[in-house]
Length: 128
Image (cartoon, rainbow, N blue to C red; front, side, top):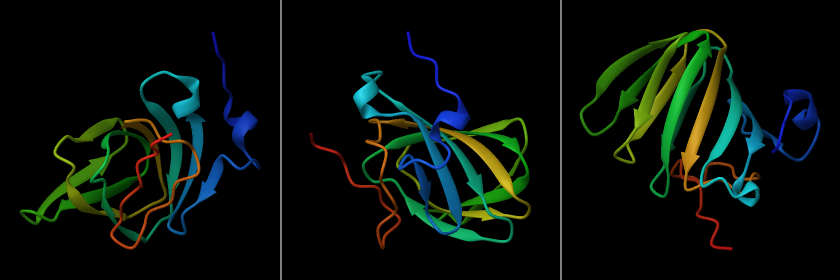
């Protein structure tokens, strides 16, 4: 059994600043759950290019409002509190935050905990 509080992560190396976002990594690869869980804040008024070529992600918005634009078809998906979106095809997308957004993000394969997006918006795969 493992219990993690957000306070356990704040101010540690597992609170990762990505510029437009702050990701608090709660469950990571070394927890051996087969997925990872992040509590992420997206800054209001930002646009972030993301393309998880190596991961599938489900995102549950618990606060705020924004939109996702899938770049393969330029479709705009409005996102607000109490909605989940799943990037089930490694979708390259833009995440636009109208207000500050708080998201719970689940990744498969799991993140090791220190990843940030590269120039293409990609997280690397942790091969260890």
